[in-house]
Image (cartoon, rainbow, N blue to C red; front, side, top):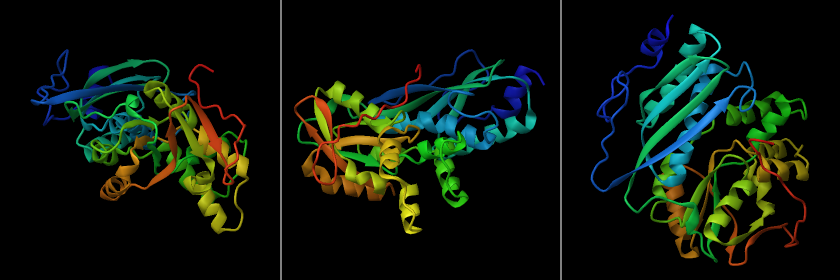
Length: 324
């Protein structure tokens, strides 16, 4: 099967929102009046971002999900995406599963595949996604203010815990590993929540490399500091909640390491004024996404961690570094 046969069979579909999709040298998008385009790219490299042999359907899902998560953090509605795919060889069963996972998530969010590229090489997936947001309403990293509440969506740390198990550094019973591995390999982009927070949140980003590392980007952009209450970590780690129900909770430091610096969570980290607490909860309910208040934005730069007794935690938690 040649390159163009591969594209035609697995990745060509009619477009409904784009002016022009797959088939020409460029795709064409026409933003509506009063709308800005939100654009983001992410790359997944075998051996660096996912294991060789990862389920192809889940890999297709995740490749798009990590990009949709960026749109969610901006409060944007997905519109379209391009796919650049390097493959060691043409493996038709793999391509069928990969494209099915990719396009199922795309269809769920009304996001059209409008172009890209394919070539032979080590397995590498690069997606660029395009979204729409009303002019002036995009959520940015730079809007946090002293006194704002700090929130995170969903759960944190399960993906890191699954990774530690798959690397042989830790062991979980199969009943606990399976849902954690699902979080690692098929995250849920919080698109609906991001849009619901447009007029509520003061700043936002997605948690991809670890909570504290990503929070530092928001603090730097906003010129503020934060205090994080680490007593919430046990409730944020879904695996810990389940393990606690069996009477065998995980060790506290492992829970903190996974939730505070784990990575691959693709949840939303956002700030909002205290007067917006009811609105935040309403947005969470409307988007069927849990949110947890985990701290407070402070005027003094820096990041402070507190335990359940209000004591300062001095341990350091390093997030993922793509070049470390």
